[in-house]
Every structure is written in structure tokens, then in C-alpha cells.
Amino acid sequence: MNGQQTYEAMLKKIASATNYILFQFYTVNDDESGNEFKEALIAKAKQGISIYFLYDEIGSKKLSRPYIQSLQQHGIAVSAFNTTKGQGNRFQFNFRNHRKILVVDGEIAFVGGLNIGDEYLGKNPRLSPWRDTHIMLEGPSVQSLQNSFVRDWYWATRKLIEVNWQVKINRETNQTVFILPTGPADHLPACKLFYVELINQAQTHLWIASPYFVPDEATLSALKLAAMRGVDVRILLPNRPDHLFVYLCSFSYYTEMEKIGIKLYRYKNGFMHQKVIVIDENLAGVGTVNLDNRSFSLNFEVMGFVTEPGFVQSVKKMLEDDLAVCVAVDLNEYDKKPFWFKLAVRVSRLLTPLL
Image 1 (cartoon, rainbow, N blue to C red):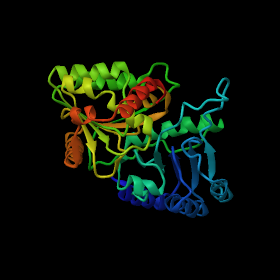
Image 2: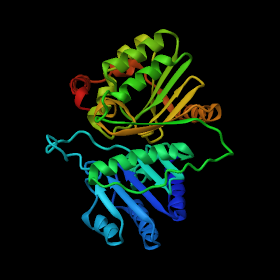
Image 3: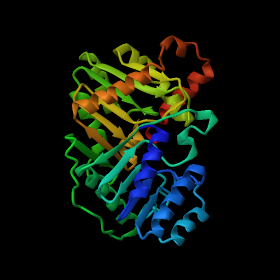
């Protein structure tokens, strides 16, 4: 689902809640869209529905105090993720909670790339139209997303919340879904290891859509090896920057990508923010993970992976439609760039561990 569809679906499910709502986003803005969700949550709180509202204090740095107070005044439990909490974290700017999760009654859940704000509906002229992807889940996967929220809420507040752990099965569908929450608290770098393994498993095609392309050496090597064994490796990137250094850094990979046969594409129809991966005909993933060091090692992220062939084909078709409005990266175009641009690209590459 894209922006307007996702917001409409989430608001509809919020309105149908009969027990509780778990609401977690990296960015919540105090704008028209943010206030629409605020009013929807307040309306449910007035009906006696328990609501837990969790946001990242860095991603939501523009969220106003009156917005938060308005929620709290209506009995909604609100907390920042508290990245700086804990010994040694006082001045911590990493370890951001980049997850975007909505759970209603333990029966319906949403996860994907969309935050809450007008820009995600394409209302920012510089980045409009906005291209993103979200999915709605039912069944056991909802409890998995719910578990991620409960753990994050406990870290932020040191309080446990009562939720519904009983699985509601939708017998009309039979899809295998795997929820992968990852973060810097993992004993091993689970996100990076999982992605490298996915890339290594690809046999025919590997398509990845990400707004940011700053891979570490292990991921970069896995992508190269996949291309060398004949896998159709395509990476979809935005053509417009929202973070300049990250945008510039992606150019530094052009030469080595082209030499090995990896195809890079720039999305031309607005700003592409989706985080999607398709491997062969077997697996498709949608969630919050970008193809960069921050998502792999520094952020708390979550992905939903589905193995059902129909879903995989629908995601592949979606990316084919996106490719139709992309332009293939031409190394010659980069060669024609001025010296100052190439210098900025090289400097950005040096900053890779921080991007």
C-alpha cells in the first residue's frame, strides 16, 4: 500500500479497535496528517480503549509538547523510546528506533516504510510525489510485531503492558510470514547477517528498493558474488536526495557496480522511500530496513518476509511498475560530473560508517 491507502486503512482499523492500540513510529509530525491520527486516537481513548504511543525522540524532534500533552490529557500512554537511557548512553545519537508499527487488538498489524506526516502523502513539493510501501498483517505475525512493541515499550518505560497473545487465524489465506526485528541490542549483527544470507541464497534475481545505498563490505561483496554467478541484481534508488551525504555516497559505488553487472536505477517519479526486497520467486520482504550501515548495525528495525508465491509475484510486479519510471544509471553521466561533485562523493564515501 502507498501513502493515502495506508493512512486510510490504518485509520479505519484504529476506529474499529475494541481493546487496545499499539502505535509506534520513528517520525510523527505535528501537521495535518499527524493531527488526524491524534484525533483518531483520542476518539478511541474516550471510548475506553487502551492506547500506547511510542516515538523516537530524534526522528520526531519536531513533535510539539502540546501534541504530546493533548494525547496524555485523554489518558493515552505516551513515551519517547529513550535512546539515551542507560549507562554510557547519555550523549548517544545512534541506536534510533526506526520501526513503524501499528497493532490493533492483537489481531491486525501494519508495518513498512511510512511514518506519520504530510510529506508521506506527497505534500512536500520538493519530494512529491512520495513513493512508499506498507503491508497489513493478520494471524501469528501480528503477535510477533506485538512482541517487538512490548519489548521496546519496556525499555522506554520499564513497564509491561497487557496484550492479547491469542492468535486469530484468517482461514481464507495461507501465507507464511516471518517477522524479523533487529537492532544494536542483538548479540550478533542479525540484520546484516540475515541480508547477506538472503543475497547469497539468490539464484535467478535479486531486486532491492531502498532510499539509501551505503552497504558495508560484507554486503557489497555478497551483491558482487550474486552478480558474478548470474543473478539479475537490480537496486532501485531515488533520483532526488533527502539526505545529501547519503545521496552523494551512492555515486561512489557506480564503477564497481557496473563492472560486475549490478544494475542501478534512479526512480524519477518523485521520492522513493520504500524498503523492499525480492529474492527469486521464493521470498519478498517489506519493512523499515534501508541498505545502509545505520539500518544494519545502529538502528532498531523490523521487516516482514513472506514466502507465498502470489504475494512474491505481486511485489515483483510492483517493482516492475516502479522500474518503468526509473532511469538506468549510466556511468558516463557520472564521468561528466564536475570535479567538485566527484570530490564530494569521495568525501561522503569516507563517512560511510556514520551514514
